[in-house]
Amino acid sequence: MGNTVTCYQEKKSLEIERPDFALYSKGAKVINRYTSETFELWPPKWYQRLFAQISGHGVLRGKSPITAISPDTYVGQCWPFPGREGQLAILLSQPVYVTAVTYDHVSKDAGFDILSAPKDFEVWGIIDDGIGGKTNQPDNNGYEEEFIESRVLLDSKNFATMDDSSPLRHFLGRFIYDINGSPVQTFEISNQILKSNKPIKAIIMRVLGNWGKPLYTCLYRFRVHGDPVNHDENLFLSTDKQEL
Image 1 (tube, helix red, strand yellow):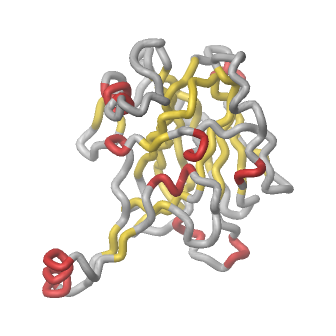
Image 2 (image 1 turned 120 degrees about the vertical axis):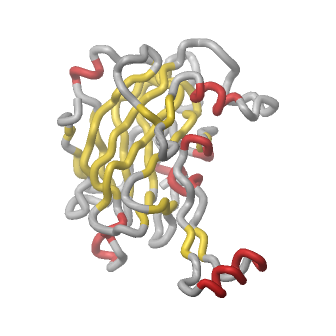
């Protein structure tokens, strides 16, 4: 499993002819408890840090993780987390059989610091077992945390501990984002994994390293593609190219 790396498909165009079930504007949510903290840059001197703690000024805070499931990918429009390892947990807009994921980053030609881009990452699915509430219930604010908590263990860094021993967790692949390739790279789920495909309600993108930026890693956009579990629902069957 650890050596499973699926090659990406370069896109000549930024249009992806597939619906994105991790899109915030279509109902997907960030599960904050299982998502890394947002990077903050504090002043270097102790008295400056003290002033910042008291006043709330002088600290540069990154954009929220919702940025990573939103369509804008302009330079700087990304979610940073501290260090080279971290994760993004997403409650999908609806349960799907995941067939591919896409990661978007700013183009290397933009002259921006490309080293903060993720390099190695794993994708895990949390299986929809039909138990619990629905994602579109506004009065059920804590459901997503409860749903994941019953299926995921946390390590000392508050990262999700994933393995194949639980029937409610599904490994979807380990991938490499190539900063020398297209800014938008789609990673297909392997045929071997697709043979045992399960309906997925939540996704955890676990970043294992970036391209050389020790201070932080920045995620521009992560997408999830697949087939809806309920094929009678046509809400998400159109492509998301209007959202790019």
